[in-house]
Amino acid sequence: MKNVIIACDFEHKETLRGFLRLFGSKRPMLKIGMELFYREGPELIRQLKRQGYPLFLDLKLHDIPHTVEKAMVNIGHLGVDMVNVHASGGLDMMEAAKYGLKRSGSTTKLLAVTVLTSIDEAILANELLVHKPLEDTVKHYALLAKKAGLDGVVCSPLEVPIIKKVCSHDFLTVTPGIRYPSQAQDDQRRITTPSEAKKLGTDLIVVGRTITKAVDPYAMYDQIVREFTDGA
Image (cartoon, rainbow, N blue to C red; front, side, top):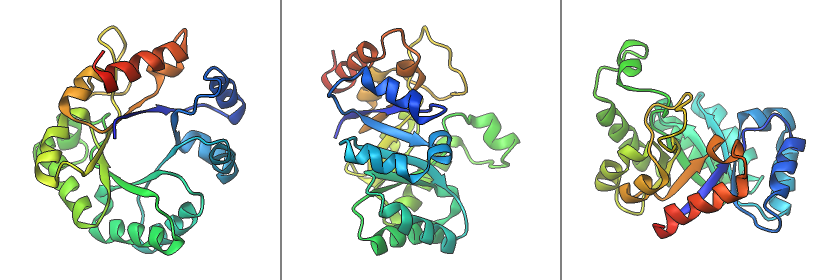
């Protein structure tokens, strides 16, 4: 299930529409996150689904189990392909999220964010007061997500091999933090190139500014797809 997801972190839907026109009739998988969703709301999701776009709704729910369950019922009715929660919300919350999607009759895949790719070992220990090694923390969260019945996790490509080893090969790994050596890291800390992510065995990569800020976004998307799916 190799695929490249474009992170559409735009200010409003008009900018998104202009960006998508560059792709013509092609329908790449899109990640719609907080910035767009909180401005445009569910109607944007409905419009994109009607137009045939596969969607990853990246809202990273993290609340008490009852609230997350009810939110997932509503999200399930939108018909997105994937949605996520924070694994740090705990086992009960993740199980409630899964149950909420089930209540909606949805086939949406549910993922858990392990540790954000903007966080490194120092931040984990000094700011979040998590004194386990980062890899151990990610592994624990992935195992917890699997126990809760989730379909996979969002993680750095660097952690994919250990997650596949402890959770099984068919447990999905969706990985942001994709950059080329010539690019600024921005707020990402645990990063790889598309070809490195492929070698590490991840299933889907999420690429935002590398594509959306490129001189020719379609050409950059096509290059990344070739590198990630064909090894070109």
